[in-house]
Amino acid sequence: MTGSPDEASVFRALADPTRRQILEDLRDGELAAGDIARRFSISGPSISRHLGVLKGAGLVSERREGNRILYTLVEERLASCVGRFLSAVCPEQIVLRHTRWRRTEESEHP
Image (cartoon, rainbow, N blue to C red):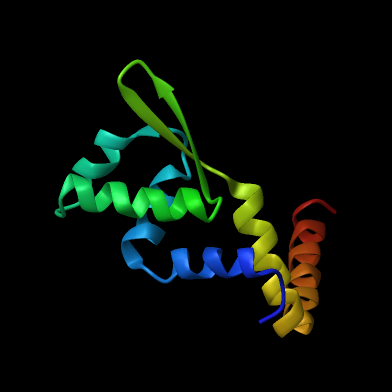
C-alpha cells in the first residue's frame, strides 16, 4: 500500500463496521460520547475503545466540556488518506468521476 505507516491506521480503523457507523453519525456534527454510545447495542467501554481507535488514526478529534467528551469528524484526514489511496490504485476512476460531476454541474447551470 502506498502512503505512510500512519495511513495504515486509517484503513485499520475503517475496517470495522461500528467505527464506520460512528464516522457516519459524526458527519452532521459534534456528538458527546454518551450520545454515540446510545446509538449502539454494545457496551460503553467497547464504544470508548472504538473511539480511541478512531482518535488514534486521526479520524476524530475530541474536546472536553465539563465532564463530557465531545467528538468531531476530521473530514480532511479521512478524505486525504482515502483520496491518496484511490488515486494510486484507480486514478482513471477519479478522472471519470470528476468529468461526470463537471458534466452534471454544466447541465444544471448552462
